[in-house]
Every structure is written in C-alpha cells, then in structure tokens.
Amino acid sequence: MEKYKINEKTIALYSLDARTRVYEEDKCFVVDENANSIMESSCSYFGSSLEGRRKGTTSLIGVKYKVPVVVEESKRIIFFPTESSKKTSCTWIRFNKIENYYYHQGRLVLCFKNGDKIVLDHSLPVIENQILRSTRLEALIRERKNEN
Image 1 (cartoon, one colour):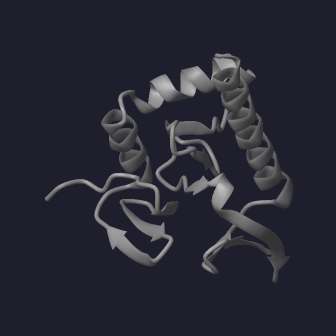
Image 2 (tube, rainbow, N blue to C red):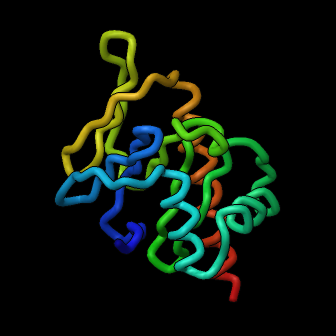
C-alpha cells in the first residue's frame, strides 16, 4: 500500500500515535501511519528529508525547537508541529489554512477555512507562537523569491 503524501488539499495530520487522522479540504480519513512518518515521506517526495527541512528553517529564522517546515515551497505548503516532532503524539498543522482558534471547556479549538475543527490539548500561546514562526518563515521565503 502506498504511503500518504501531503498535497495541496492537506490541512492537518492529527496524531493518533501509530495512526493519523488526515484532514483535507474536502474529506477526513485515517491512515495506518504516524504523522511524523507522513511528514518524513512527504518531505522526501518533494526533494528533502524532514531533518533537512528543519535545518533549513533553523538557518532562516533561528528556531531550533518545534520547527515549522516547508514541505513544498511553490504551493506554500508549510506545516508546524504542535509539540516536539520526536513524540509520536505530535500533530502537524498547515498554518495558512487556519481561520481562527479559541478555548472551549479548557481545550483549544482550531477552526480551518473549510469549516473543519480539531481540538487540541495545547495552550493558546503555544499555537500562537507556532503560527508566528510559520508566518515569519513564509514571509522570508517570499521576500527572497522577490529579490531574484
């Protein structure tokens, strides 16, 4: 069976530890693969390893922990981890598909532009910081493209 690859419609990889709930713009389904493995194979598919993408981000914006990664540059596919990507519980979010977010009953609800919602056990500052890092990364890449 072919492994799932991130594509233009992918908006989140919600970790179920050994499995992943994949959110796409028009559907949601579960695959028998962990989210970090999907990130690794997708980065490789687009020409680099996940570690290579992490190192690239670190050299561009200086962050070393919970590093957002550019999976595919021309289509602006940038994901951030909700926690250390070394953990199997790490969920990956495509930052530019988020519409808004809020707390409900002590949990963080992320709302996507397509109407989907996911609930996370993370604090608002953690997610806001990840969105900020991802935005900085995207802006720097866009700026460098415009220089050429």
